[in-house]
Length: 200
Image 1 (cartoon, rainbow, N blue to C red):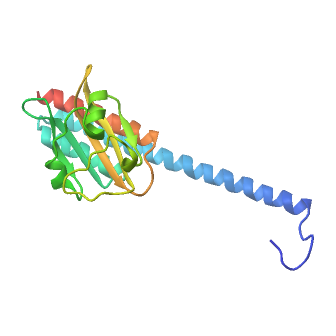
Image 2: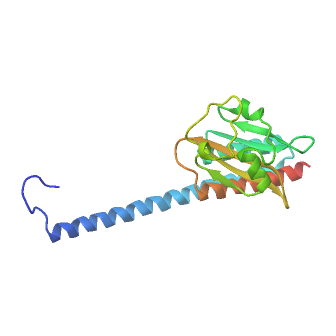
Image 3: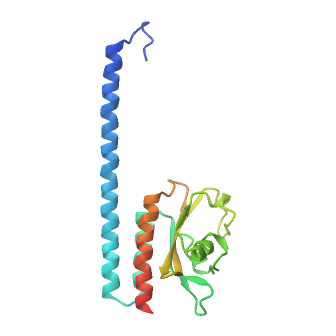
């Protein structure tokens, strides 16, 4: 932009600006690719650590704690929880919960087909919801504030054709969940399913 003279720019200036813009575009893409590689490396390391934990201990609570911690940290979530069947098997409770609403999550009973998590358990398909307030399946967790910009991602713990629980992470505001986030959570859910099966 020039306020000093008319017709300040010509074709040579346009070419120069295009060259600079192209260079910046390449730099931005390289930075994105580098960050993607770093992220994949961290996720692979976390899955490897979880795998070692599964093979080295039969303490289900310890393994699930590690899985929930990796989910919360690497997915930049505010809260995470893993829900497993209660004694009678008709509902689910958190075996582990991390984050500010931990007590509320530990007190929550998940019923298949009820709420977003219950629907995902019943449907056996991982999913993210980037605006829970607009999702008709949403059920408010007792004792928590009603958030306008809450994001939720859930992956069922699958055992063959049935669900044996779910791993869930929550964000309030911030970036929206993506397919790459969901892929990592599914990886953790598979590890949690193996740990659950081993414990049984």
